[in-house]
Image (cartoon, rainbow, N blue to C red; front, side):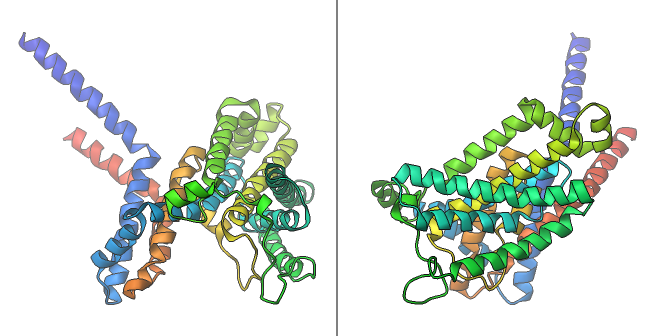
Length: 372
């Protein structure tokens, strides 16, 4: 009987050991650690600037969770970030660092704007036309960079940065044309037609207490599930990841890496462009003249890193970032600097980037315990 109890105890310990070892290699653990340190570092900066970290964080979280209206606004802020995060995550699976999601986002919103203003169509059809225009623009924008990499060997990071600025100035040029520019002055375009908007019905807007509540988050979730399915359940997804891991081995295995690169980068551009279209059609309704980069594409890099480039993870990391952006915008009500959100997110990215150090330290500590 005693031997049986000891055997069961050893079995339980072995199971626990296996679970702990499995947890050590889970990216979610290090994401949680990174978020903790992000808030810790943000609190230190607040304290050093003469603000109470507890008061600031209480205001931040209260501005997100205290009312349904605030939660809806957090989701609205998060929606374009989910799309740009997906764009960066998908291209990363290909072994490509998509720093050009910003430019793809801009041309997507610009294409949707032009169709939303110039085309007269029934509501549902008009929305589809705007999104198709955005997808086409984003695909072309990213495809051109793929051509430069595959055909001419030009590093895609340099090309993406260049294309970001081209998109920036192209947008400013187009919105200042007579056809698109707002009537009566102002540094912005006309509003898109009512039929091109993706707002929820008025009854739901009243329930959510937000006149900008829209279908965007549903589209983002559908896109995330679609990308997950492509990567895990299709041969194309296998080819994408094979090329990302080792393009030479993939080519030796019979995969047309050039063709895969063209398709994958075009799809990545389409995702970021859809984010631009959703932001336009569900929130801003117009495009203002840029004084600087908006940052949705660059923030998408953070979303992808927090999600460890997992498509479903991008939904949650996008919602987290969106909540931080919206809640952080209310910190000025207590005279606290809103820049603390950037400090927190930057610290989270830093700690995720060095997560292998945490993994090594935890593994070493457990190994030392076993030896004792």
